[in-house]
Image 1 (spheres, rainbow, N blue to C red):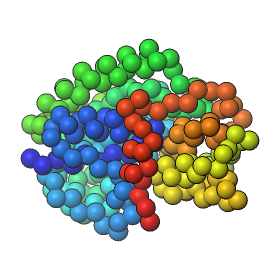
Image 2 (cartoon, helix red, strand yellow):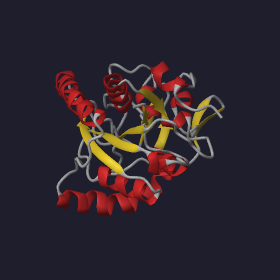
Image 3 (cartoon, rainbow, N blue to C red):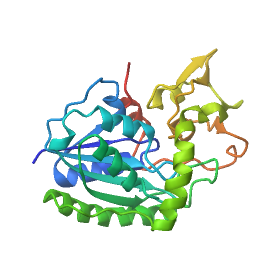
Image 4 (cartoon, helix red, strand yellow):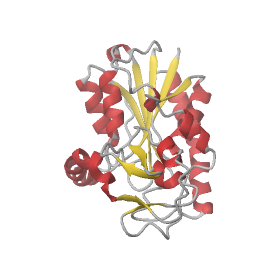
Length: 264
């Protein structure tokens, strides 16, 4: 059965996961930003995988927009894999409800612990700890692949109900609508060399260069690609990121991110 694995990524965790699962199930992996500009998305594959990072214990806004544009969702076997650094919350449950409202059914959902990248709160964890998470994923990808190859149904991995209620049920609902405007806290410091990489890696074309410096346009996804991929560590968010270590997945490189961002 032909399977397309669609993914959204800022720092490469979900890209790496999408690549790995696509390889295991002999599917194709496709960037969500590369197709989001279409008015309607028709998918010929019989099975769809959706891979994305958990944002604020929920689903990135671009992923929700993507699902709403798929024309023939009711015809597909759909599975999801969410990557998370802190807690996955009930991202799988939220996604399931979005898919159901669009006429489809989420057959399986999995969570994968990866190094976190929310630099406003913390820097990159030690390389040794990162490697342990990567090793765990190398084992889990085999398990997930066997599950979805046979179109199995029912497995949904989430946090416990109390965590889901507090973080995904309350905080996510309050904050999600404000995400696009949260880019007001981004700024570039004196290390900026005007290279424009921040603009190129933005998955929603939310950055423009004004007088050779980045300016954010109020349509942010909070993926932090601009901050994490800046070669000079010149992109900051708020007051506390300048001394914190950046992170991106070691198997992702900047060209992977740039060539999979839509051009419109």
